[in-house]
Structures are given as structure tokens and as C-alpha cells.
Image (tube, rainbow, N blue to C red; front, top):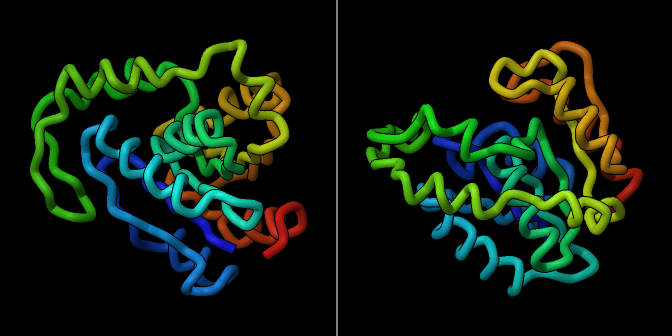
Length: 191
């Protein structure tokens, strides 16, 4: 089994979710890059990794903005995708507040989040006609008390598009239910 972990905005390819994936699937199974800050460059790297590892024993797991990237990879490469507290629509609009100088809180990297970055995200929006293609290859897990993204609305949106979705009570944007989500996931996609 190979799992590509995709972190969120201003984050990195290490931390609790990666540790949980390694504990569940084995250390050698998890590919966890720290992505370029520009969405287009991040998707180029992720696409290269999907081309290299895609197969029946591969899936991507994306958190927050990484969930949005995971949806795009599922469409482009036909890979299975797991979404954790994902951003799923109007992502550029949701990140417009971040335009300008940024500091990645995990890596300390300083960079500019540009208007071009927002345009690139807007170009990645999932069309209504594409959602039916994702039903069989996407699963989503959310914490109801996510303080960054509106988890109940995202859950309703995903379920409305036929995506298998679990909303856990409580929690937060960091996602407090990783153990439960991985246990459920292994019932559907065993190692």
C-alpha cells in the first residue's frame, strides 16, 4: 500500500496525521512531501507522484486545502482519495484573505501568496458535472467543530453529491478523530 499525504495551506508534510498513517499502514507506505507554496507547483509535484505510484494499492489523503488537491488528483488520475476536514468549493474565494506575505507555521518559510495563486486555485474548482465521477473513489471525514471550515455544510454538500462522508461530533480543524477515521477507512480500503 502506498499513501500520498497532502497537507493543507501553510502546513507541512509531517505531524500527527502522518504519524497516524504510518502507525496504521507502515512507515514505508506513506509519501509525505512538504509541498511548494504555489498551488500550480504543488499540483505539478503531486501529479508526478501520482503517475509514479498510482495503482490498486495507492490512495491520496488530503487535509484542508490538501483535500481540494486530492479531489483534483482523483479526477485527473483516477486515484482514490480520502478527505480530512477538506476545502471543497470556492477555495480561491476562501483563501483571498491570505493574499500577500505569508509565513508557513510548520516550516517557517516566508513567501508571497499571489493573485496568480488565487487564479490557479479558481481554475481547479470541481465542476458540478464532475462530482458524479468521484462517488466511488472518494471518502471524507470531518470534525463538526472545525473552526476554519464549515464542516456541517461541507458534509451536506459532499453527501448531496453522493460522496461517502462521516461527520464526527466535536473536534477541530486539526482533526481529532484520525484513529477512528483510519479504522473506518481500513474496513473499506484494507492495507
